[in-house]
Amino acid sequence: MSGWQSNYVSAPEQLRRQRSNLLALVGQRLQAGWELARDRWQPDIPLVLVFHDGAQLELAWAADDDLSISWNTIDLRAACTLVGRRHEWRSSHPHPLAAVAGRILTGWAVTESPYFPGDVDLTGELPMDLAAGWSMAGLWIEFGDIGLHVFSGADATYISDAPEQPCDQGHTRVTHRQLQEDDAQAPRDPTASS
Image (cartoon, rainbow, N blue to C red; front, side):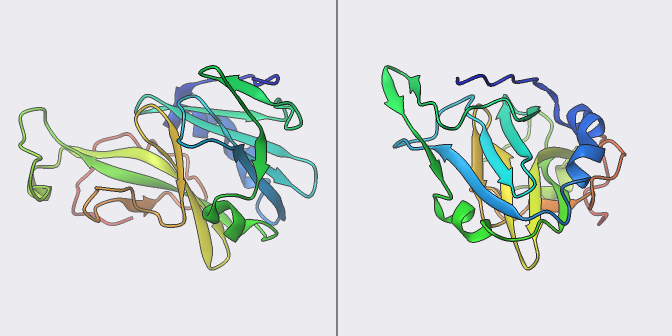
């Protein structure tokens, strides 16, 4: 895809590697967010954020925990072909990207979702008393009073304007403000707040 150089590793490790680069974007104005124009989200497609200083941040999730953060590798002028169809990059669309375009990035955080032992019945309301800990689910990028959630959909990158994931029954939490260096994958007391 138009020069993209992905570098998937576990999300906590990726954030440890990229922490200073991501924090350097605080105070920068987002020119636009870019995604491929398509009728449904495809796996292994990055979200691209272009800042006024020229930095181009490329974020992509794969599997449940692998995150790629790359810089300035994608040529947004070049279309790419996915599943036999040609797709063009489009700027600041859909709504979550349009809402943050032109705004100043003010902070970063991690979103986490509870995880449960394999034998727990998850068909009804989540049994939070049986949660084994919390796992990193996404990045919450703050732009003043609004934000952009870039999160894993198990095999694809999704975005929203709320720090929750669909179907999580309201149990996603925002933590590790400014990307603290501790490991967001470590099991934690699910009743403790960050």
